[in-house]
Image (cartoon, rainbow, N blue to C red; front, side):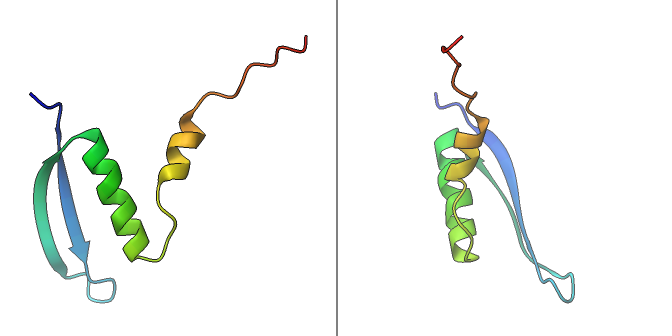
Length: 64
């Protein structure tokens, strides 16, 4: 069985604050990453791949 989590998606009109769409879905971590990257790309923003790199621990300094 796939390890999924429930996500809620809401799209709201920025001017009127009216909810355009509200839905829920079950996604795996990979599906979530693809969906978020797609949403950001559609908004004209860079995808979230930089988040995974930012979460990685810094390399160890072995010069000491």
